[in-house]
Length: 332
Image (cartoon, rainbow, N blue to C red; front, top):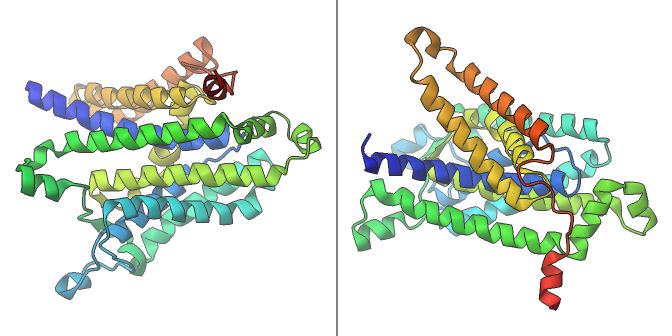
């Protein structure tokens, strides 16, 4: 493979890992800081992706409308897709949280998993909503047309621009979460995670803070889903399975260190690099073993996670014990 091909491959890897890092930070708000056992991440992944698709693509017309069934097609800019994905995911999380946040941890996990699968199956079976199992294609990418028209940028170089966009959004989300977590609000979330009874005795509304955490994390996940959709330019319900939409994100957060946003980002990049690296290695297997390649990849990820949990139970970086660092810096 030529140097240019290797660089392009690494850029694609960095984009996907950056998007997953955003999902990890959303999950970190819910689990790492509040203790909400949400295993329905794929549902918010799916809703974020489909929301931005229906906001930013035009409605099908003419002969094309016979083959693509799409309820909404507003043909609006990329930024509206991101904001719409965040808002819709936040609203859905609020509605889900009303009945589920009163459940215990195990029941909350079961409920969120079932709800996530329900969303995926709705998009898969209701053809009138978003073209059913065929999904939606031709999603616009931000600045692509502008760069092609004004700077004559070849389409094969666009991923470099999209990597910058993903990193900028990832950093902005990181800064926003850090500011929130190091505030009194964030310290209440940690108190709720550690001992709900003690937090309630201090006069805190446990349900309200859990709801805020669930909604905030879901909005971050919605942005991740939107970025993924514009990166792939085509989405279908089959993309949002529990494996890629939930399980691998949990592995990333646990490996990096829950309760630490830097750990969430690091875990996303490490695990995604291993995941892609094992794909390259399994492609080198003899033809008779290639069919078992996916199972070998699962085994490698599982073994890696076990090694990390034994060697570093708190994850690669571990939880930050001092939560008011930013406030202390501001006061000095």
